[in-house]
Image (cartoon, rainbow, N blue to C red; front, side):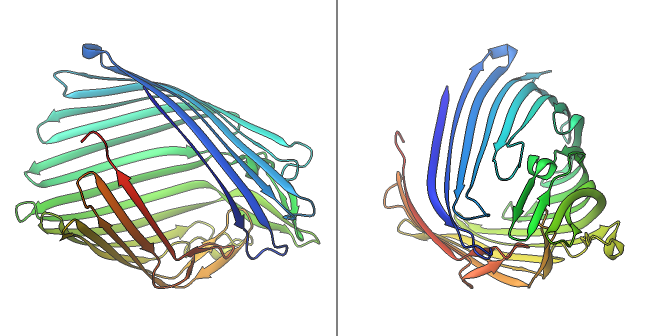
Length: 398
């Protein structure tokens, strides 16, 4: 039996808007989970969860705006193993009710809800010592997307020790948000209008990878090729220049991403590791620059990304980690405002230092984005700030 709960309260600013504002932001959540071992019959797990977010904005629009977002979840799951534990199975069902209430965002119809009922099953089987396969399928019904199936399959083959090949394929829908289907509000000189006919986005992807461990396990190498396609892609566009300017939502576009990921990790011994990884990704857009609504995604992600770093135990209870990253320039596209913004290529430096005076105590200090005070990442100009955090962990019963 497990119970978790939490919450936070904060005041945040929203820079870059025509009207400066300070927002009161509150959120809380609770989760109750029960698990029972049925011995030879497997195990059963059930959970109930609730969360709520309240956002109060002063002078955000012409009048103050209040938003309430809530979600309730229930799930039951049965796990079992059979054929001398060479086959593992899971069968379950879930229910979700999510809603959003705002007099300002949904003029005339402030209460918006979506209900999702889902059934699913997943099975994995070790067909031979060197071959494992897995497959799963789910069927869900929702108010915003109707009846939608999803499925996945994967196989892992180890032709010899310390070498493995894997292949996977999956297909899943992404439900359109309540905001994009039903919005009706004005911000400054722009009116946002939802589209109730938006269908779920359809995402298909496959991945093949190779993993190798050498030098008696000290060196780990990995290469991954992937392909991902999205149909009925949700995007925002300027429907009318106005005044007021009208931003609406549609699903006319489709895009495909192809990429390669390479990684190396080497361990010098206990607690000392260095690593490097590289990602190449290229996007093909069906509409491209010919689309009058400007939905071209070909520069929507960095083409090249590199990370270098290491972790080490420094002695006397001290430990440290450092990460240096680089990514190419790209265009940040907004799914809500019909805007895009070029993001320059950038470097990033993160560092983490910890100290354990005793095995049951740990103190740490971490810094992110140490090379620059702000790193632009979003189409509306939102930036990731340089940040520092510290903490203490105490373990009991060890």
